[in-house]
Image (cartoon, rainbow, N blue to C red; front, side, top):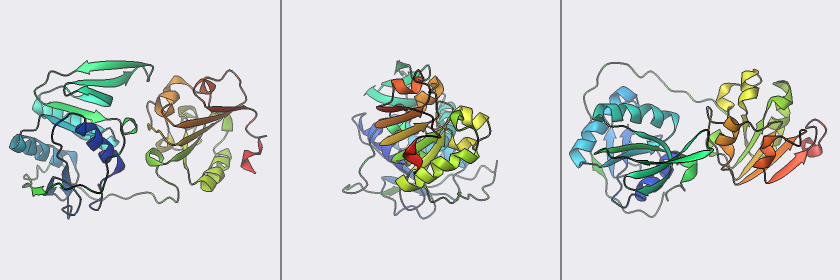
Length: 286
């Protein structure tokens, strides 16, 4: 959250938690966060993992929670393994489905197989893939708020500041339209074709690992198993062959359009619409 509203992936995690069948509480930690719609809130001066972990442990002990979950964002992936270690339980990561309160489904082998995991731990700790669950409604609820006391600072590290890169385009993981480029673009300068198209579509711009490794674009644009997982309404893949690692990060997109000059490119196997052509000769950029 940003002390004003919950982030989209937190709303996805709330939906996932509701499928457990019990009462769902949302812990919101921060400064002036009481106005964020939640069940439990606490005032802390930073979002350092070292400071939040004892807070979560104390809250779990106070309310006797049986499950602790968070979105599988960089923040959630950093926080919950530490919480699980402190509780001496094994976490379940990046789940895409909840079968029962102790049984979860997650992808393995770059998304080519599904693993059903039964967790016998007394406290279940798991992260949720945001693209697999709808966002919970942010209005219409009637939950009461309850404040819990913060824990003493551990003093291991100090929060200095957080700054966000300013961009006129939507954030990659929450955009409704994503335009991604691969090594077929041949250079970073040619990504301007995608930037211009993205501006017309109000889209985010992504890239394959091959394009990132080639130095065309920074790694925060990477879509795939080792990058960001996206599931927009429309995903346009330009000059991307469709390596298994890339498909794992975008194959849940509602509509996939692929442009590649190789008719045998794996990307066409998951595409709803495909154009076999030289990307530099198509008229989509006009």
